[in-house]
Amino acid sequence: MTMTQSGTRARSLRAPLAVAAAGLGAATLLYLRDPHRAGAYGFCPFHVITGWWCPGCGGLRAVNDLTHGDLVGSLSSNVLILPLVVVLVVAWMRWLRRRWGGVDDRMIVLGRSGTAGILVVLAVFTVVRNTPWGAVLAPT
Image 1 (spheres, rainbow, N blue to C red):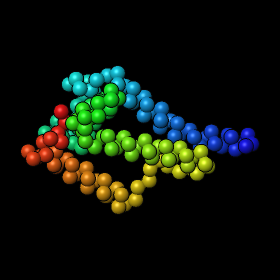
Image 2: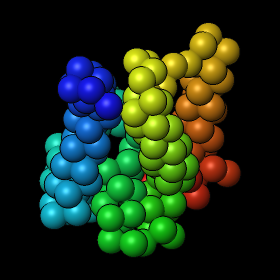
Image 3: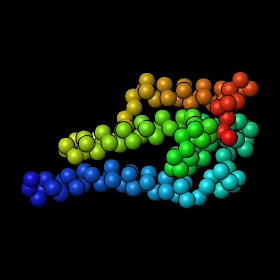
Image 4: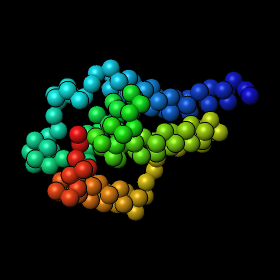
């Protein structure tokens, strides 16, 4: 490998390494500062305005629970966070491998149907978790 190839590879790895650093920093913050305490990270404006749990409500508590190894607690705070974290870690690892191989692309690229699918899942999740029969999905 020449110096030019080495420099190009280092530049191509900057973004994945920056994303990893940001993710680890956020996880560390959530590990150290407990969002289970009311007001620890502010409030959800959607919940304050509507009284409904948004699709992200409970997400900080779920990540905090994950950083402490509490999978059940994480799922009870927000059932979508654990699968999201798994998808993001796998996507990041694949992105790093592609960047290492010289492919200059983004971590995740969604088409219209993927974006629409995610939005539908989030909308349905929001409605269901705010109904009496879906109350089990409300953050604890």
